[in-house]
View 1 (spheres, helix red, strand yellow):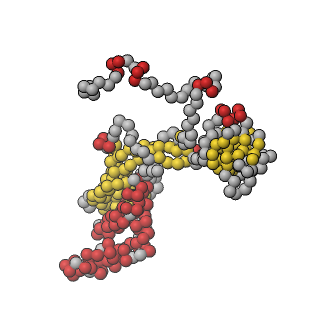
View 2: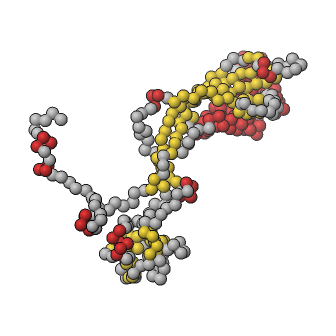
View 3: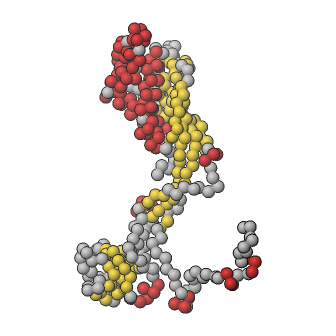
Amino acid sequence: MSGIVPSDSIIKAAIELGIDDMRKNPWLISHMLYDFTHNKYLNKIYGEKQVEACKEWFLANNIEVYLRFRKDKDRLPAISITLGSSEEIADHKTLGDRSTESILLYPNEIGKPIPFIVKPFVPTNYNPLTQVLSIPQDIIGNSVIAPGMLLLNPDNGQAYIIQNLAVGGIVVDLDQKTIETATRFGIVPEYQLYKARLEHSFFRETYNIECTVHGDPSTLVWLHAIALYSLMRYRESLLEANGMAESIFASSDLYENGNFTGPNGEEAFSRTINVTALVENTVAKSPQRFIEAIAFREPEECDTYSGGITILSNLDSPALAEIQEDSLW
């Protein structure tokens, strides 16, 4: 059950977890910059010094990760996340939602009580040999009672499973303890839950992740790599696991960011990672009770009741409705 996917918060969590992982496990930075030490050409130029310089810079700087736009002053280096466009995908639309997925909801979660099938009553008799509890005839005649429902003592919460129906009563499961005939009982449903169907909508969403440093633009190479490494590391467990499928990363070129230029001419540089993902949002329809039993009655059983199923034979239908051997339909 995803609801509306908080994509920006998921991306923020992925980057924050990645940064925290690297602080606890510096070997991840060594793996991130693997080619500087293992590529024979890069190793001659940069080597282990590049990896150690990145670790030193990383441990000496607090990298802020935040959702734009915020009111307080930005401190660099920083990674900011901005929501982009979100458009529902027409190819995934149908005239009616064909999802069969549903969720189970506890009554206290949604403020809907589970009503009694039969309100508390005083039984007329109980036979411990046959385990038949006799119920007043007016209750039997106007209630739908089915095996699996629970016979409940509303005073102490003790419940017994109804095994079968009997003439004038019910047969209950007494494996645990015997019934106390002096108490009153009610009958509650077998399923103490509500069910709600989920409907799905699919959106193509984009996000902009801006990595910004001040002073030396070479440190932006490290910051961009840290953000991208974190996103890739948590793509499966955070993005995809929370409804952000088919994510694609694309990075811009390095550019001077005039928004962070200091009064003394200090320069800031940025590089943006664009994330595109297929996001699945869901909504829950109105909670419904489970169907536990269906009763069919003859009209003559009750003068005020009229219902049931009437099956008409073909002899009573018009001749045009009869199936002909040469009918094309």
